[in-house]
Length: 245
Image (tube, rainbow, N blue to C red; front, side, top):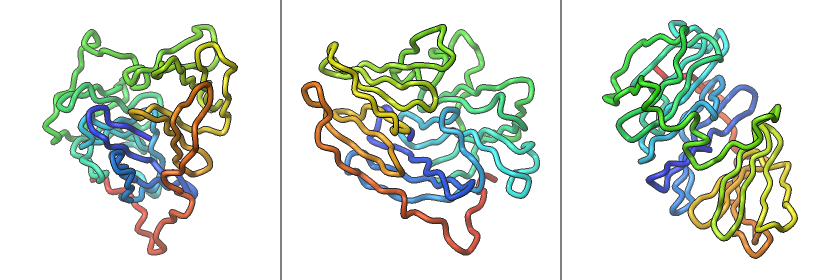
């Protein structure tokens, strides 16, 4: 899930079956969902971002030999206008060590480039910030209000302060989430795959479903499923393809 910061818009990167991803637009004001294109390959969410106004997607993708864009070397960073994946800007990468980035505003972005990153084209009309001193946050996660804890941990632990004394904790990369309220016993949710705060509620992904609940006194309120993605299957006509050029 990627949540825009200035508009009630979200993007769901719905994974599976196999190595397929579907772009799903999320109207967070009405909790309406609209399916977009299927992608044959992988889109890495931690190296991707949505613009503050919810209009653009910056994504890092990789695909197998049969599906990759040859000139990229098999992995690439692109900027597109949602819900399309068609690249207005495209950089080849060829590996997974670099690539991806984040929006600094609706008009500027940061590209996580290294010596293997190369520009193929940029017709986005946006400005790329290249001065490290002007990069305000080390990662999208920290830009979005998460604070890294435990410098000596082998896996990262991030915390986000929520209203009314609540803390949301992301335990490692695949270790689930925790909620804690004003010194009360910690509530553990090891099956949560993603979670965040959306205005007056908490939202999370679990077992192929996007759920939400309000936070009550020392407990999670009534759980409501916003959307069940388990029944979403690709078309049979083989149209799950790359649409980046």
